[in-house]
Length: 381
Ligand SMILES: Cc1cc2nc3c(=O)[nH]c(=O)nc-3n(C[C@H](O)[C@H](O)[C@H](O)COP(=O)(O)OP(=O)(O)OC[C@H]3O[C@@H](n4cnc5c(N)ncnc54)[C@H](O)[C@@H]3O)c2cc1C
Image 1 (cartoon, rainbow, N blue to C red):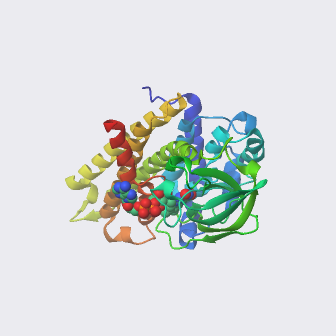
Image 2 (cartoon, rainbow, N blue to C red; image 1 turned 30 degrees about the vertical axis):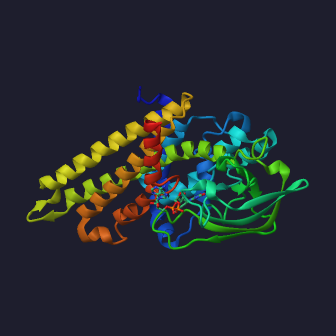
């Protein structure tokens, strides 16, 4: 497989890097400490064309591939993970709408995401349904031309700021096939009975909004069902995971790069025992291992993303990449902080935030354990 970037891809990568370096560093610590984000940066990112790059031209986007989207994720996360997530998660679930939504839903929902006029999210996880997606119990009961939704969702990215969410709901609880019991409904967040409570105190990516949702007799029209019939929700979510897991791989490589950069700068400057820390072979080995793992991780996610764009969704390969890239990110952040000694423990130093931010890539969009289960299944089937 050829990993050489085209001129257009190089331009996208460079532009994303330039934007992130211009906008993120001055505000990153403020957003991390305050657990807030300034949406004017998201608006600017939309104006410059970084948001919704996968959305087709027919719906206002440039119709680029998952690979190009990943290039942007990597560059944003290499500068700041929290801001990167806050910006790029505003279209979380848009692939699902484009793939399975009705023409009316696509026309209504997708163009505002690209223009910076709307934010969306996807709410699957519940208090008692995390890795086991199909145990979700938020119900959607058909009543004439409407669905009535009751239940709660946990850890919804953009829950308090989204204009609409894709909600994974139980529509056929008695279906013998647990993978046909759910459907996805689009829920506008200004509907009566919808409430979102911001979750504070996250370990990392604190610029990004995360919320707990409560749905109390929320009514949506039947036309808000995604897909032509009920029972397709699990399949639709699995499709979305293949896209978003690939984005998380790119996030992981971006933050691993940031960790390496911080480590290299620190060990070249800091002197102990009369010499720079970079003169000690143990530190040289650490940065050599980090750089090698980052490159291997990048090659793995490039392969997965390019395969998607060439028409092959290889679930096992994507899971391999998600697990491996995640582990590389967390290990690199840990080693980089270790090389900072006590300074790394203080939030004046960027490496502390990198260390905290990195952990999420081993958790969301499928934990590393779930990814390994998927890899093993792909080998054992
Ligand atoms: C910041 C943040 C943002 C998020 N954004 C979203 C969002 O936008 N939308 C959304 O729907 N969700 C979101 N999530 C939820 C996230 O996807 C879940 O936290 C994740 O899927 C794990 O589910 P859980 O937390 O319930 O953990 P659990 O499923 O309870 O897992 C706990 C531990 O047990 C392990 N485990 C579980 N089952 C098995 C098994 N069969 N074999 C071996 N080990 C197992 C897991 O790997 C994990 O280590 C977000 C979470 C966070 C923290």
